[in-house]
Image 1 (cartoon, rainbow, N blue to C red):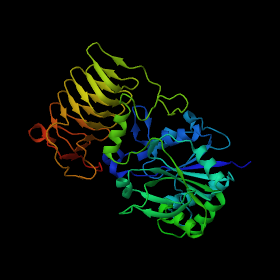
Image 2: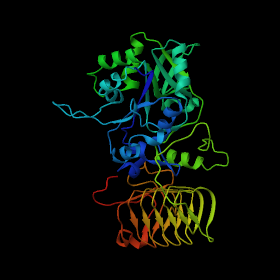
Image 3: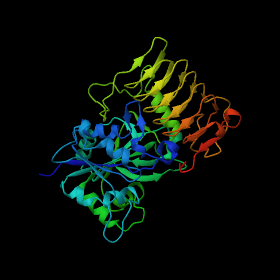
Image 4: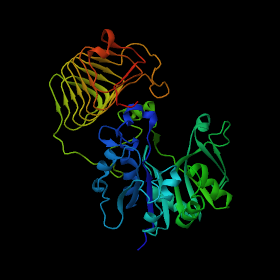
Length: 423
C-alpha cells in the first residue's frame, strides 16, 4: 500500500555559523527553548500534519541527533510501516560517497523513497523553528495540479536579497527565480520547503545524478522550470525563524519569554514533541529570584535568574545572577557569579565569583562573522575557574585554568580554545 506523502528531512548541516555550539553536535540537534532540540519542530510539524513516514538524512556529527530521535517514540513515529528512519550516507562498494548537496542526499535515498511508492514527497530542512501545516500546502499543490510547490514567505523587500526570491503570476505560478538578487523584484522568499509529485522528483534526480554538488535551489528547481513543469509558490505567513547564526539563535530563544511570545510553545492543538529525560522537578530556594524565564526540569535555583532560558539540570548557586542568557543541560553556575548575555552549552562548570559578558563590545579575534552580537559563547564540557572576568564577543571551549586568564581576565573579543577542540 503506497503512502500519499512521505517527508525527507535534511539534517546534515554543520551549522558552522553557530561556532562552538556545533563543534560536537549537528545543528538540528542543538538545544532550543530549554527543553527541545531544533529538529523537534519540523518533526512535530510532520506528525501534526498527518505525515507518518519521515526519512532523516544525517551526515555531520550525528551521534546526539541519532540518540535523540531513537526510534521516534516521542513523535509517535515508531511505526511498523513508515515511521522515522535515520539515513546516513552509506558506503557503496566502489567508493564511499558523502552527500555533496541537498539534492544529491535525496538522490542517494531513491530506494528508500521507492519502497513507499508515494504520490508526493515533502522536502524539509532540519534547522528552522516554525509551525506549519504541510497538509494545507499539499491541498494547494493538488488544486493547482502542480509538479513542484515551493513554500515562500513574504519578507521585507530590503531583506529579500538574502534569500532565493520567486516571481509569480496572478495564479501564484512561478515564472522566474532570483538567487540572492541585488535588486529583488519580489519579496517572496523561498523557505527551502518543497512538495514534489513523485514522478517529477524521480525524473529530475535521475537526470541530474552526475551534477556536482547537486542542490535543490541551484539545480533541481531550475531543471524543472526549463522542462516547462508547473511550479507554484505556496505563501506561508506564520512564524518562521532561521536560527543559523548565534545572534538569531539567541533572539529566537529570547522571544519565547516575551510577555506575549510571538512563537507559542504552549498551544494545545499544535504540540511540539520531544524526547524527554525523566528528571526530578526543579527546586527554587527561598533566596532565589526568578523573572521572565524558562526554567527546565531538575534545575536548582538559589540565585537570581531573569530574561533567560535554562535547560534541564542547571544549578545556579547562591548570590549568582544570570541575565539574558541561554544555559544548556547540566550547567553549573558557582556562587556569586554574574552572567550577562551568554550562551553556555551543555555540562559547563563555572567557578565561584566569575563574571561573564562584562566590559566593552570589541570585535572577535577568532571569527568576527560568527562571534558577534555582544554574546559570550562557551562550548560544551568547558570548565572555567573561579574569580575570572570574561568579556563580550568571546569564545571558550575546553577545560581552562587560572593561568589561561592573564591578570584574571579574558578581554572582549578574546578566545580560549584548548588543543583538540575545534572552533
